[in-house]
Image (cartoon, rainbow, N blue to C red; front, side, top):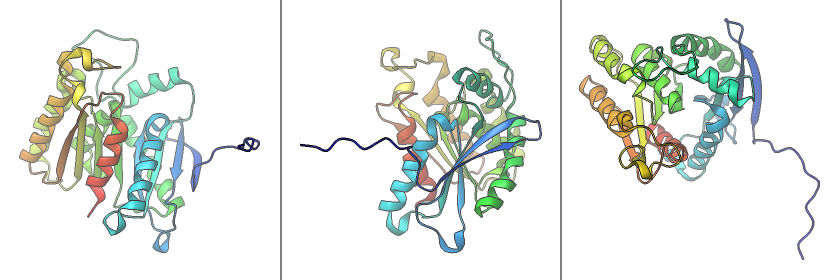
Length: 276
């Protein structure tokens, strides 16, 4: 007969830490850190910054640690995962803030909604202001940062890649909402990248196969057919390659939907961005 369960104790992430930081605009941000399970040489780390951490922090932690454990010499042991989001557990407030901070423009081309949008440039400034504290505290390499985001997070990452590519050296863009503002970022790519000399970032793009096509298969979130999640992701990849971005890969994840694709995208994305 099995023993009775012991008294409950708090669940903690191995080598996990949580901080709050105040950005120059006065907003409080929650920074969740998972260090490598095994200390690295000289304690040096490389940070993977994950947006919407309430949803995606654990995907990234599990993926990085599984790859480090099973990848032998092919996968690095020094990755730390850093979740960055507003310092609140209120889902309604989180939704309001992500609609503002992760979108590059006010909403257009669709019916208006109740949210304020267009704060991506502000959030890029906020992230940049947080880097020094995080890198000092955890001895993270300021010249080797990785971005990871899904949906609006992927849209924000696309915006940073085009406008401030120097902030990160690697980009994991899962199901980026490139439909935003009638394809704003695709238009920006045409306007900006031709004049940019910084095309050194490694980029991984992904989308779920069932994010486009037959609406009946797009459970549980059915984007409008005009969103063209897969087609726009592929178009973005083609344009980046045409402009000289040689380190760009993409993956259309079989049988996955917008809501189910992140775990696979984070696992494969980290592998493609870091494995040797």
